[in-house]
Structure formats: structure tokens, C-alpha cells
Image (tube, rainbow, N blue to C red):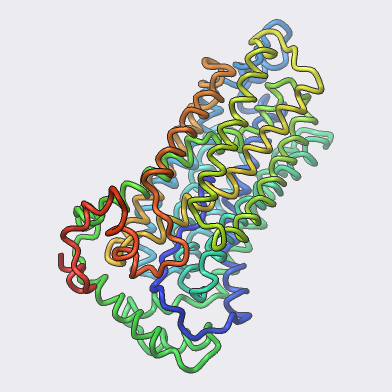
Length: 511
């Protein structure tokens, strides 16, 4: 989903390393950035279906929902202001990503994570105390800055402290924390919607302070990564930290590789211009397309608006929050499936299987809703309501073990070292851009396209499955430095872009 992990490993060789408690604790603390992101995604959908919240900030939507005769199954939440409440976060994240790409480089991963935590804390305070729409939107924009900073720094941090052999799994830890954040948000929305009084929504928005504090305190506790320290010229400190996190004294081979990687990266004076070179085109096309496709599966539309969606489908308010808690739990469990299979079955197998499952799930949902749910008549009985829920869960499950984590993991593996950090910024930018577009447009699309919105997403799923089949190579178990020789030069289509590649990293950096 929107903010999965994005790692940039330094090398493919497996250096001597223990899985130390320091690495595990550091990764858990850093991953709380994912928890915060997931909580923000999950909480906004639940809050926007609470009558007290709508009455306070969106009276026209409240009126549409509460007055007999005005109710419309598909258009009851179609309001640009309501959509802006959700999507302003992603617009802010999109801009913050580029600022964060400089702070991670110049100030390090640790300080950038601290900044993200502070943005989260201030944004949460604005949201919980909001007395008008302007305060709400300012709060969401501050949270968005936090998301931009966290999505840049946390996954980099994770992939740089993790030993090579568990880098894939630790990379998915960020995505797992996102899904846990969504589930927790769904549960809290369910609880606060039951409270008497007007302020349930304030508690829902205010409890974001817990993951925000976890990230802020966590970023004060952890040390910066050896890669970041060495890149900023702190050689001895970098080497000492490397020994500490690896739990061994012999870190010389890894230390030298980080120094060489840092030197090669410094020789690239214009990283974004370098990214446009012919030899980086296959990776750039795949990274951008995977971000766009990840959003066009329709997952965020379902996750943001699950309570609103289920309410639109005729589930009562309680049942709709309950149903979205079920989809949240499916999301978490399926992400664990991906952690197990990603280095066993391979990336392509997960993407292709999920493509078929997502396509079929969306077609079934389209047919059921097309026959039974008209704009002003709801013939969706209890049984068919459950059927829709089952297929929504089938869709969420297949997404969570494929496009969710792999939409980030694959781009992180395929770029050459000299293009990797610029490649990351571009990938995060496109992810946030399309997350924003879908979040801003979804409720209006639901109003105008009605049940056909699921058919719209199904067509995109079909297209991305064909893209996977023909254009995404398998990267399982291939060291990052050997991608060019073993993957790109042998791919039936992409090999034509590799004619200018030279073998040495220095030649690549100066190319």
C-alpha cells in the first residue's frame, strides 16, 4: 500500500554478521514510522463515516446522510472538501519527499526520522484539537510532511542496518507495520464510534500520538547507520557502529565496500540527470510503473474508505467498521505470508498469482453490485453483503502478499548504486502522486461510475499482470551488483538498453 518499505542495500555479498539484539531493536523502533503511516491511512476512513465529525466539519455531507429523500447509495460522501481531508496528507508527503532526500544525505537517517516524529506529533495535536476545517487540513499537511520524511529515512535505515541474508524480510517489516497501523486504527474507530458524546473522533485522531512518540523516542535511541556516517566522512565512527550492529570484529570487507560505494556515489554530480541515462531506463520504467500500478489496483481506495464503502454497500455503521476491521486483519496476516514466500517462491510468482486473484475478486464484486445495488435501491441482502466482504478480503489478501510489499522491494533491488538514491525519490514521488490522485478522486468516481469503479480497477489489474509477465524480471537471490550481468543483459526486451554498460562501478559512475 501507499508507504511500503524501500531499501537500498550496499552489496550482494553476504558479509560476516550476527543478527544482534541491537539490529532487531533498531529495526522495530524505526518501523514505528510505518505504524504511524498505517494509522493515518486507517483512521481517516473511519472518522469520515462518524456522524459527529461530519456534522462539525462537513454539514452538507451530514445532511445528505441523515435526511430522508436525499440519500444516494453511491453519492452520499461525494464532497471535494471531505476528499481533501484525506488526500492533503499525500500532497504534503509528495513535496516533503524531495526535501527529505537531501536531509537523509546531509544530516543522516537518524535526524530525518526525528524530524518525521516531530511533524507527526504537531500534526496530531492540530487534528485532535481542531475547531474548524482549516485546523484539520493544517494537521493533515503536517502529518503528510512526517510521512514524506519517514518514508524516505526509515526504509533506508532498515536496509542499511540489516544483514544481507534477512534484508528482504526486514524491508517488508515496514510494510507489515503499515498494515498493523491500519488494523489498530480500524479497531479504535470501532471503539470510539460506540462512545456516547461528541468527541469520539477527537480520540481517534489524538491516539496517533502513541506511534508518533514511538518514532520520536526511537529515533533518539538508535544510532545512525554506518553507510550514512561514512558518506558524511565520519569513517572511524562508522566502522565502530558497524562492529556493534554486526556483532563481530571482522567488518573490514563490508566497511571497504561501503567506503567504495560512498566514493562512487559521490562521483555522480547530477543524480537525477544520471537516472535518465539509457542504461538506467529499464529500472526507471519498472520503478515508476510499479508505483502507479500499486495505486491503480484500487487498494488505497478500499483501505481509506473501507468504512464509508461498506456503509455505501448497505452495511449499517457498526457493521461497516466491523467489516473494515476484518479486512485490516486479513491485510496484516497476508503481509506475513509475503515475508515467508518472497525469498522462496520469488517475486514474479507472487505478482502473477495475485494478479489473477485480484482480477477475479473485482469482477465478482462488480457483477454482484451491478445487479443488486442501484443508486437509490439497495437489494444487497445479508448473504450477498457477506459475499462482497469475502471477495474484498480475497482482493486485500492477494494485494498484501504481492503489490503491497513488492511494489517497493523490487525497485529497491534493481537500480545500480549510482542511481539508487535518486531512483528512490522518484519512486516515492510517483507513489504519493497517484495516492493523492486516487484519494482525491475516489468518492467522486464512486458517485459517477457506481459499481463500474471495481471494473475500472480490474482492467488496470489485468494490464499490470501482463506488464509483470513480459517486463518484470525475477530478482530473487541475485546480488545487487550482479543485476546488470545476470538480469538486464539476459532479458529478452531490456537487454537492448545495456549496450553502454561497463563493468566497473567507477566507469558506471562516470558514464
